Length: 358
Image (cartoon, rainbow, N blue to C red; front, side):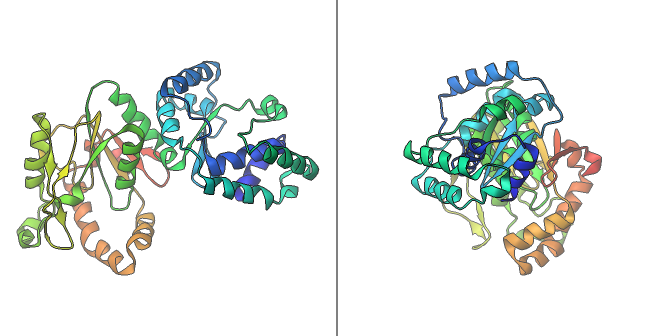
């Protein structure tokens, strides 16, 4: 109910069908409106031309259950490309499942409509007609349109979380047929999640620095004393970066922390319009590779600690704090890694940072 209360307070002129529209988008997303890429682009550009940049609107407005609205006027004010929004919208447009439709039906019938400033009789009448019609998509009311002039795109919240860096990446991709990108940063700053979003939205292929941990027999005190010495940068350079620079096909054998050995099965790193290397140490200068773009992800220590605890448990948190995080921080400081990035981004506050703020 929290999100509904927020919308009721922000949009006091809303009507029963606006509440239903929000719930529809919350549980079914934008899959009901999944045109071709060309049609989505044309419609976006038509709306974009009519929208006036407005900093008073929230850029991202949560709906709940994994979806948000991105307001076009706020996006325009922030310099977000409409083409980026089209890509995120299309990547979010999944055909609603029967289970999702049933969840929506249960939600509308168990809703305490009295607390949302909507006439209960109007709500019940709307639900009867809507269910009789087969639960179709819902439009905003005329009152809502007149009061608020809604213009937005519904996208998955995971994409909105990375909106600013994803917009920067998409703009860079338009300048070259194949872009190479490094995503470096702190443990639990979201590097793998970010890379997965780039795969789903932009078709990126991804290589993971976790596949290049240094084998135990090479973890000598001398080696670990070197900034970034706990990653097998030599093998990474030979198996990934050199063939990538030469335009060759890339595949490699990932290191298994479970066995302490390289896997017998190779992982392909196919050539795509966006090729991402994600993980701490991806910007190690010993890699001797000029990426087309680089992003450094940061997170406050207290947030990092809680994320690791939830993901790995208390025992592994202690090992992170005593071993891996200090090694990372030494690498970041000694080799000035944040300063090598085009963008530094705080994955908790969703703010762009200067290297000095990292």
